[in-house]
Length: 430
Image 1 (cartoon, rainbow, N blue to C red):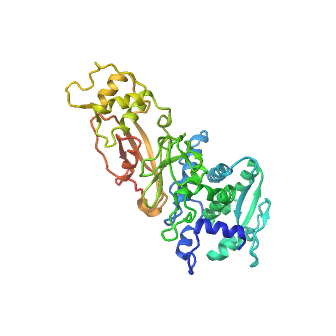
Image 2: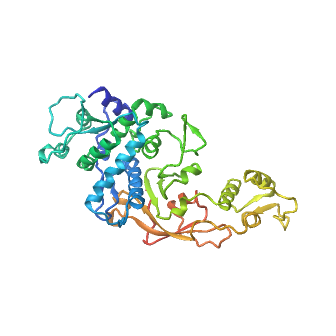
Image 3: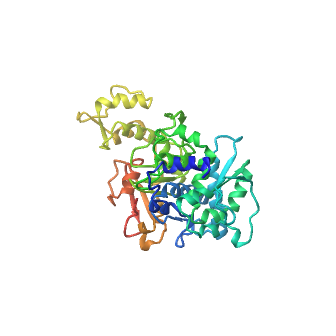
C-alpha cells in the first residue's frame, strides 16, 4: 500500500488493532451509487453506515434535478439523465472541496484491468473509456476484494481543470455505480481537499471519519461533503469555527441539535435530517421557504430566542432586550400587558409592531422525505414519502397531526409546523 493510500486509510478508518477493520464494516461501505427501481431519482443504501456520503449526494442530486433541470419531470428521469445528474453532482461536491482554482483534482479509481500484486500508486491521466467488458472496473469489482487488497490497488487520477474533471467523472459512471463507488468517491473528495487540510479542520484528529465500531460517518465527514470543510460543528455564518466562517450552503443540516439559523436557511429548500444513527433528506420545491426573512418573521425568530420553551410568551422583564435586539423604539404607554399578568404574548407583540405583515411562506405546500435504507421504506422499496406541510403561527388553533421525529426535527426551524403524510405510516428518520 502506498504512503498516500495509507494516510487516507488512517484518516478514514483509524488504526484498528490486530484484527484490522472488521470485514462486516468494510462490506457495509462497499456499495456504489445505485438508483432505486421504485423511484428513479432516489439513491439506495443497502446497509447502515454510508448514509454519511449517500445522503449529502442525494441532497445535491435533488437540488440539481429540482432547480437546475428545465422541463424535466423530476420524478421520472431517463437513464441518460440519471447518469448526467449523478456525475454532475459528484463533480460539484469535488469542486467545493478544492481549496482554490490553482489546485488539481484527484480521483481515486480502480485499475482498468486485472492487475498484478503491485501496490504502487500511479498518477494517471484520463484515458478514453474502452468498450471491452474485460477492461472496465466492473470486472475487477466482481472479484471478492478484501480491505487490504482493495486499498493496495487504488490509483490516483489527477486533473487540472473543472472541464476536465466533469468529463472524466462522467466517463467513470460505471466506477461510481460499482461495488466500491461510494468509497472511491469519498477518497476522491479527501485527496482533492488534501489530507493535511482536513486534519487542520478536524477538532480531534485521533477520531477516524468512519466510526470503527458502528460504521457511522463523523460530523466532520458529513460537513466535508456538504460544505467542503471538515469542521466538527455547525454554527452560524458569523461564528468562526476552526478558522473558517460558516455560510449557508446549497443544502443544509437539521440535526436534532439546534444548529445555526443560517444552516437552517440554505439557498434551496433541501435539508439533511439526522437521527442518532442515520441521515435522511427532507425537501420541497417551495422556494419561499428560503427567501429572506420579512421583518415580522425576524421578530418572531428573535422573540422565540427569549422563549426557549416555545410558550408563546415571555416575562415582561425581557421585553426591553427583545426590543433592543430588533432595534425597536418603545414608548412607555404601549399596552402589551393590559391585564397586568407580567407576561408579553408573541401574538400581541407582533400585532403591536408588525400589524400588516404576513409571512411570505404559504400556509401549506407539498413536502417530500427521502430515506435511502430499503428496510426503512414501505415494502422495502426506496421511494419518496409525500406530504403536505402546514405552517401556522402560535395564535392559530393547532391541527395536531403526528408527533414523529421528522416533525420534531423540523420544529427547530418552524415551531408551529404540522405534517400530513399521504402514507399510512409517517416516514422514518432511522
